[in-house]
Structures are given as C-alpha cells and as structure tokens.
Amino acid sequence: MTAQAPAAVDVEPTSVFLRACRGLPVERTPVWLLRQAGRYLADYRALRERHELLELVSTPELAAQVTLLPVDAFGLDAAIVFADILPPLVGMGLELEFAAGDGPRIRNPISATRDVDLLGVPPAEETMAGTLEAIRILREELEPRDVPVIGFAGAPFTLASYAIEGGTSRDFTRTKAFMLSEPAAWKRLLTKLGTVQADYLLAQAGAGAQALQVFDSWAGRALGRDDYLRYVAPHNRELFAAVSRTGLPVINFALGVSAYLEDAAGCGGDVVGLDWQLPLDEAWARVGFERPVQGNLDPAALLAPWRELRARIDDVLDRAGGRPGHVFNVGHGLVPQTPTDNVRRLVEHVRERTS
Ligand code: CP3
Image (cartoon, rainbow, N blue to C red; front, top):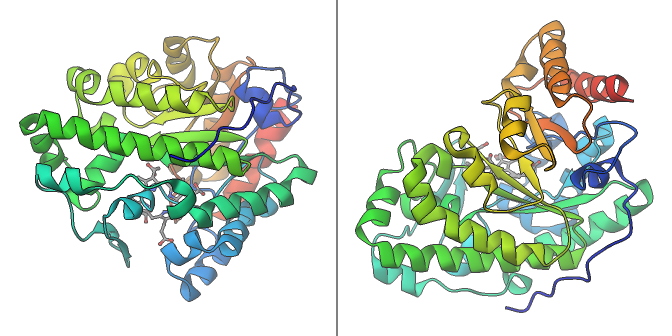
C-alpha cells in the first residue's frame, strides 16, 4: 500500500459543510445531496449519450465536469467527486460493466473460496488514478469558492455483495450462503476489500479530498443485528480506524440499519449519515447529540408538490432543532425523476430558513 495520509488539518475550517462536520457553529445549515450529479440533470443525460458511465468516471476532466454540474446549478455546499463504489473491484480482478438500464454487472463473480484468494490488492494510485486526478482538478477549481470536495468508497459488505451476487440483489441469498458456509474465506474477502478501500480513501485524501464518506448500502438490508456484529462490524471498525488517520471528517452512511443504528454508528466515523427511515431527532438521540449527523429527507419527497416537499424539509429542520452539527441531505440517492426545480427550491429553502 502506497497511499500516504496528509498531515491532519487543525486550522478551523471556514466552509459551512466542514464546520458542521466538526460540530462547530455555522451561519446556516449546509446542504448537499446524495447522487446530486445524476440522471435527473439534463446536462448529465446529454453527456451520457456520448460517454459510457465508466468512461465518465475514469476520465478526470469529464468526472470533474459532471461533479460541478449540480454545484454550479444549485449552489450546493459540497461537491462529491463523480465516481462509483464499484470500480475499485476492477483492479482486484473482477470484471465490471454497467449494462444499459440494468444496473451494474460483475461478469466473473466469486463463487468459491479459491476466487477470494485470487483477488489482488493493488494500490489505488495505480488502479484509481482517474478519480484521484479528478479530485485534484476539483480542488483547484473549488478552493477559491470555499466548496469542499468529498471523496468516497463502499464498505466491505456492500462490495462483497456485488462481488458474490454479480449485481444488485433483492435478498442477498448467495452472499449470505457464502458468509455462513465459508466463514474463513468470508473474513479473508472482507479483509481484502477493507484494505483496498482504506488505501483508496487515504489516496483520495492525499489527492485533496476534504471529507470522506463510506457507503454501506446493503448490510442493513441483508443482515440481522447478530450477523452484522459478527460478520461485518469488525471490518467496518477496521476501515474507519484506518481512515481516521487522515484527520479529515469521515461520514459513516449505512442504509436500513434502524434496528441496530447504535452498532452501525459505533463502528466509527465522525459524522453519521442517516437514512430516511427514522425521524431525524429520534435517530440523532440514538447516535448521541454530541456526534454530527447528515440527513435525512426521503428522496421521494422531491417528487411531491412544493407544499408537501417544503413541509417535509421543515420537519427535518425542526427536528434538527438548530443544534450545531447538522448537514442537510437526503436519506438516500436522488432518483432520476427528480424535478430540478424542486432541488433548486430545496437548497434555497434550507438556506433561507436556517440563516
Ligand atoms: O453525485 C453523487 O452522489 C456521486 C456519484 C455516485 C455514483 N454512485 C454515480 C452513479 C455515488 C456516490 C455512487 C455510489 C454508489 N454506487 C452506491 C452507494 C450509494 C447508494 O446509492 O446506496 C451504490 C450501491 C452504487 C452502485 C451502483 N452504481 C448502482 C446500484 C447503480 C445502478 C443504479 C442506478 O441508479 O442506475 C450505479 C450506477 C450509477 N452510479 C449512476 C450514477 C450517477 C447512474 C448510472 C447512469 O448514469 O447510467
């Protein structure tokens, strides 16, 4: 592993996003949105007509351009680098494709313990150079505007589910069968995945990312608490511990973990990303009000008329109660049907109501 963590930044940040991530007072609540650069944007769809998704992701200038589309259009308070959680699997030996309208596919999924041992653990500097360069370009572009750049990676369970199922799964049958039948190989698989993601996150920090987010999209959907604690939590703890060395704020976002939110949040991270299932104040109380949180509007609310959407935004803000340490966000990614007018009004409303 070659990635070096930069020296911890101990100067107080000025941007509202980085301040909120540290629980510092802010002049207004920062807002950014999961999947803010995506198919709901006409400019994105136009670019996608000319380029495959993986081409957009791996070409630094294009990835930077896509990242900036929503930041420029809506004045968001943070820019998440346009990338995906799955490309790091390619360097490990898995063949990834995004089939049109079909979501991601792995052509050679893991089915035997031997497949785990054949997976490589190459450094991110070699395999993810396009995304690292995109971060450098974005940092230069956004520094004068004081808009921080967020890097991200997938958590080991979520990536293992793609590696084993070969795509997005409804019930995670193969993943769970492998986990329960081959616990030693499962451990080796999650250790390898965790090592690669830790190195990738450190490399993103080295390239200039100012915050890091870990997405554990499927562990909470797939596993009960006991299995989560036994088969997932140790690997997540190790990942957060490795990444905390950067000194950057790390956001721990796990979907569908309401049944064991304390345990998922307890794995680490400075900020807890909350999905949309629990009212924000209830989830925040369980996490502890001293810990910053990000969330948690249901992205489906953006499909509602403005009156309803505004009431839902107000509900999230009321429940946040003006406490320091709240980053406004959706509780899962924006969907392609999202009207851009609603995104614009959301950002304006959060800004007006909290300043
Ligand atoms: O703006 C942003 O938020 C940054 C970009 C981003 C993408 N993927 C680009 C993308 C981020 C943060 C991700 C993370 C990601 N990717 C996750 C974790 C977050 C979550 O949603 O739970 C997961 C599970 C993936 C894997 C993935 N990538 C799936 C399941 C799909 C297909 C589903 C879909 O929405 O089409 C993708 C494709 C993908 N990644 C798109 C985007 C904008 C849409 C694809 C397109 O343009 O064709």
